[in-house]
Length: 181
Image (tube, rainbow, N blue to C red; front, top):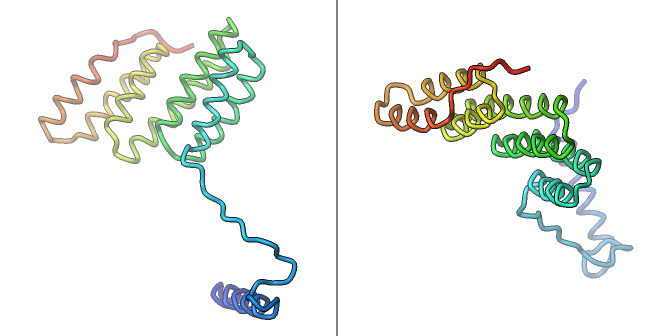
């Protein structure tokens, strides 16, 4: 027979209260010297990692930049924010420029942008999709630019004013017809 979750939590809570009441005169368990409150850092983990990537790039430390970029990519994926993935994709291209060779990081940037596109679409963020379209245009991926343009039009639907605004924003991204390698 499976024990309900509330039973486990209830027994745990009773045990904690009992231990606290038996621990001392002030209700603090014996052996506990002080209580520490942990405040969450307001800056997301991905932005902290991106700052480290930027520091490594400024110092032209390629291996450190790649290491911190990988950590930032993981944090960006965990954040579920399209903004984080665009920033990570852009950083991959900056690292690639420092390295002086193309290939792996260009593919990683494309993957980050694709994930950002999916997340922005899922969040129904026209701004997010438009920014991803611009990123794909910088990358030179014409197929993804066109896919992004379609997504923006789908998001705005039949709202003619929003569609005109979106078309103007998306059309500022250059049309790229070369195929991504």
